[in-house]
Image 1 (cartoon, rainbow, N blue to C red):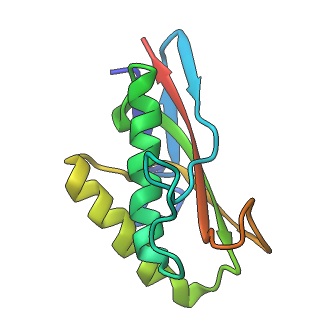
Image 2 (cartoon, rainbow, N blue to C red):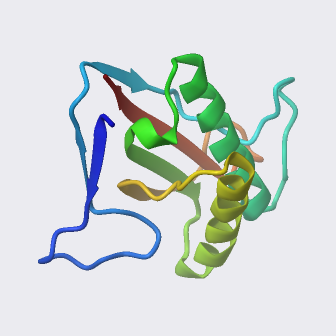
Length: 135
């Protein structure tokens, strides 16, 4: 396993992510920001953060798979969320959990959530990019 996940005792232990990931492989994979589009480029879940988050994580998984990686190899995620508010957390968690169930894997990784005014297209609510390490 190229990635070790750590929650140091001097930091809070979050429910939805780990504080640290240590990658020990020799190849890194960097995905472009993935958005709520299906394979044909059609919008998924307009106005629905949970639906968009689910599709985004499925797209991240597909991008990783194309490089021979999976979520077990991820050391860092960055999520950009339009007009982020704490009350949006429930919808985000719901979408990520649905993706985790569909993918059959644990999606809790070190992550930065960044609130933004807008993304590349007006219907987008979330964009996620990943960094993975492979042996």
